[in-house]
Image 1 (tube, rainbow, N blue to C red):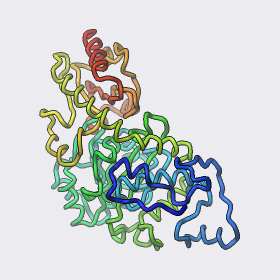
Image 2: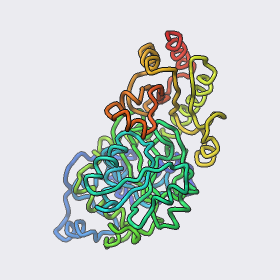
Image 3: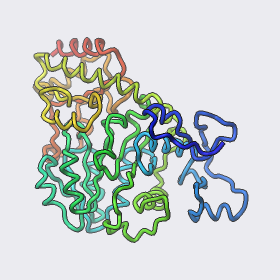
Image 4: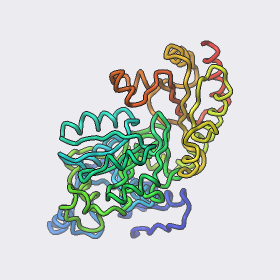
Length: 420
């Protein structure tokens, strides 16, 4: 059985279920087998030499730190549903972000981004990259003039979260892309909070997409993983780090740098067991997302009516300041994360402690509904001054909605609020 060609006219689920690995399984297994082995044997010395020298039409697997058949099967499924030219799976979402910018940035370069980021992403930019001589320029992504003013000849990328966590701010990707095109700067987005099927990165001019597949893809927090997607449209000759890369087809200079140098040397490979779990999770992604995002919208509407709630944020609410951008960029209900504010940090703690069904945990998009107080946890080690820069409100609570019946979630929230 040869490699199956994917019919791009198929629907979302059909693409996932028909996209196979590059090499047929010897037994004809329909689910990708878990290849736990470290190394792979070759028939002769020329074959292994060709594999190591990138001379094969369909690359062979040589060593699982570099590529693995199970991981490759997951990459192919994500390529099929996203329209990406190439995909690289890694051990976590932070590995996807760090590997991306270790490939693009260089001493003396700068990255333009928002300070309103997930805590570890902010720390990676502000502290880790700074020690390698990379400047991070924080801007208000609502202000296109400020973005353009921050760009110069050493800007290696613009980065934003497609919807910020936990602020739920949405950047105007169309306006930003126009500026970046003029200055020949790639648009890199983290779309973890909206899965494929809910956001089409390629349609909106995204050059590189990074995703924590631990979230929606894993199918209920079964495994840790991250993905880098290259949409193949950017001319990397404009990047001073990549313009010297002599990349063989079919890779772009960026993906060649990632796959043949950065990921190999940093060693943040996805393990085959995680890849298998995420393949299984991907097969039910659309169904789960429809359910949890609908429940999130219903909960947001419910919370807006409660007298103890100071403010609610969810992109589909009429009160949400980015509602128009949400309707423009996202398909269906915009995610399964919402936030709300109580009157004080003390009330937040009291409310969280009174919950009986909803779990106090830090992940997003588990099958279970999870709740957290970001200011004291994810951002707990930052100084008060840095929290202010990052826009972290001590009265804000983040809710990641799961698959429980929405009436049960409402009841748990109601009884906890009654204890205040």
